[in-house]
Structures are given as structure tokens and as C-alpha cells.
Length: 435
Picture 1 (spheres, rainbow, N blue to C red):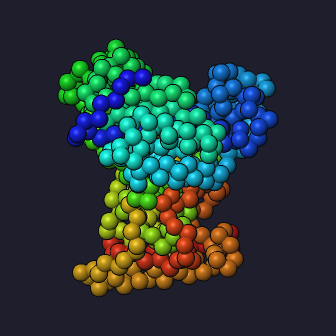
Picture 2 (cartoon, rainbow, N blue to C red):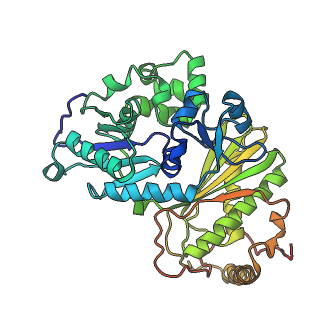
């Protein structure tokens, strides 16, 4: 373990990572599976592996692998349906325990925790001691052994945690980031997946040191803006702050298509179903999002994403949210390849507030749309969600997986009346009832 030097102006970031967190939660719930290989996956055609335990990983099974291929690799494989609600509950519970050490704690992914302990030496002692206390807290509360990394940035602390076994701790002192990162493979950098690593290997770039030594212009020519980010990661540059979880609420919805789809009309129909689901939840939580992210996962494993601002859009209305999402489609759909999965994520929430328009006809159109949305919600509340729907979303319903609003409070009754700011497309079209 490298000694940690606590400089006067350096941050102290602790990253704790519980390997295969979702599978570890299932092992606690089903102790009989602890030494047997199992995966988390839906049991249906074209299902993919969403999580694996250590025993299955030894057999060569990996996340993202088709379930059929996983079963061929391991004949005695057990398949469990995933329980996202349980995993979120366990994740948030452990995050709450770590918030005792510092209010600056975030959980960017299930089983991943980042804590800024800058200035807490008098409370918890040196950084390694504080990190050991946190790891011991995870063990006592859950039985999970975490990999722990300490550094002056979120990036380096994450990489430091990923290169040690569970139960171990790795400290990188300020100024030693380059020496630590240089010999590691580029795949150790966050956000560098197999496709990016293969593309870098084609350029004979396999180590982080090789990537860090390249001029930014040459990497930009191959990877575009992503290349500039890759250079920053390779050089250990990451000034991003640790944000408390309550500042990072988000709603995330995923649509897994019944078959790989390339038809733009079918994809728009699926996107509309996602925005309907998102709009329903926004009105239930009485929130208006400020930013939208659209992710597209292609059948060949490549993914793309695009973002757009919703600052001037009354985004709790289904159609307005759809048109905003469709504006991101042109940025994300850039390949003539079939699509397997679409993900819609909303964040930067605020309370809905109407912004007055310069033109009275825009306010009148928005008033009509809000009244129509309220009427649709009233019908759905009384007769069920499928009782009435927009014609745009008709067709075989896709498998929509909605995530709860992370960072929202359940105190008080959910508000269902839509409201928002002015702007957006023209008046709504027809709704279809009695599907």
C-alpha cells in the first residue's frame, strides 16, 4: 500500500467498489447459490445477461452476453430474474451509512461509492484509517467486501480501487497519478469499453502512457470530442466534484425491442412509449427536468448517446417531451444498423413553473395541451394505463423498464397535474381510446 500524502490543497477522495453488487445481493438473499454459478437475466428470447456472480465469471460468462451463449458456456448455470428495486434499496442504504463520514458522498452506480473526506482528519484520522472504517462499515452492514481506492480525484481513486482485490486498499499520493496510471492498459480507464479499446489497439495504443503522450489533435481526428476526454483521462485530469446524492436525482427508462429494429417509424413509436412513461412519472413526482439524455444500443454492441436541454420546454407533457427527445435522435441515430435498446434519462429537476410567452396564441395552445393531458391522466387513473393512448405509440408494446426517481422524496402525496414552461411544438394530435 502506497503512503498517502495529505497536501494542504489536495482533495482526498475515497472510492469503494463492491464487485458484482447485484449478484452479491442475491447471494445474501439465496445463500444456497453462494458457490453455484448464476446470472441475472430475463427469461425470454434474445435476453442478455445483466449480472453475474464470481462462480459464473470463472466459467467465462460476462455481462451483456446473450443468455443462450452463457448457458452453452456453463451447463449448470442458474438464471435469476433481476430485482432492480431491491438493488436500489440496498445501494441507497449503504450510501446512507457512508454519508456519516462525509456529507459529500455519492453512489454513481449500484455497489459504487465515492466519498470526499477532505478536511475530516480530526474526525476520522488519516485518509487510510477513514477508508478502512468505511470498508468495515460495509462489511458489518451487508457482508460485502469492497475494493478501496484513495486519491486526489474521482478518476484516479476509481482506477485505484479497480486494480486491487476485494478487501484491499490502494492509496495514490498527489503527484503520483501519472506513475500509477502509465503502465495500466487503456481498458482500466472509466468509459473505455471493448470497442474503444479495440480501436486504440488498431492504432497500437495499449497502455495509458501511450495514450497520454499523444497530441490532442491526433486523437481528436480519430475519436472526435471523445478523444479529448480520453486524453484527459489518460493524464489523470478530473476536477469533477463529489455531489451529494440528493443533488443528483434522475429518472431512467429503458426499452428493449422485441426484435432488432431499423425502421425509423417503428423506432419513433417506441420512443414515444418511453416518453409517455417518463411524462407519467414526472407528473406523479411533480417535477420538470432540465436535461434529457438519449442512449441508443445497436445490435452489434455499439452504443451512442445525445443530450438536449429542456430549459424552455414544458417537459412534463407527453408530446412536448417526445418532440424534445426526437431532437436528440438525429445526434444519436447516425448508423444504418438495427437498434436493440433505447434508454431515456432525465435529470436536473426543478418544480414546474409556467413561463409567460410573448405571444398569446402560444399560451392558449399550451393551455389546451395541459387540459388534454389532465383529461388523459384522469381516464388512465380511472380505467388503467392502457385505456387510452396516443396514436403515435400504438403497436405491440415494448418491454419498458422504468427506474425510480433517485434523489426524490416520497413525503407527501404525488402531484399529477402537469405544468411547465412555454415553448415547443404546435397543438397536440389525436388520442386513441379503448385499446
